[in-house]
Length: 192
Image (tube, rainbow, N blue to C red; front, side):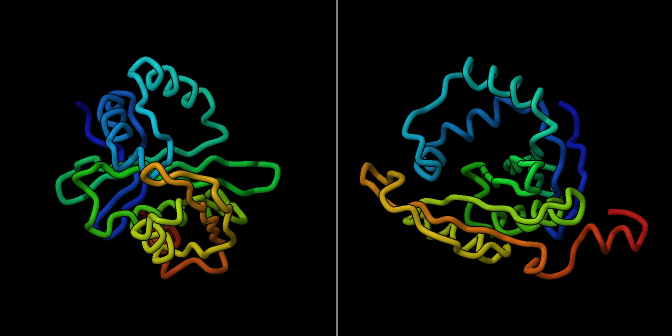
């Protein structure tokens, strides 16, 4: 297996190019019951569906940025972040997936912040938004820590443990970007 191609380095994590050879791991992470619960999808996805989906995603790369989240200390892929870009209005929807073993270490906030840095300082987006199920308090805290703010609530739009629940809409803008930009700092210093 090839080493991840790191595009952006943070403190503990890096964002790299998503790789087809990692698809079995991505598929395993996506079918973890905790991920299914958090996404509100309720159903596991077959290998054939996931493989076909990856091919379609690769063809649509002008409308999306898919990043492999890599733990820098051991070069280990631990998740994915995705920006689905609407070029007409310069916004994007954000998704994140962490492997079950990587949860609970603060990686969600750092991976999100690095992705927002890319979105605002390279892709020049005006706003990034997401939906998160209201009972998913850990995700809401991580997104808030990374710079997202609550923008609204969709009542009974999702399911959590078999019960209807609200989805929280959150958004982030460049003006509210939290902390220093790794991209801007890196470019001033001659590298990221």
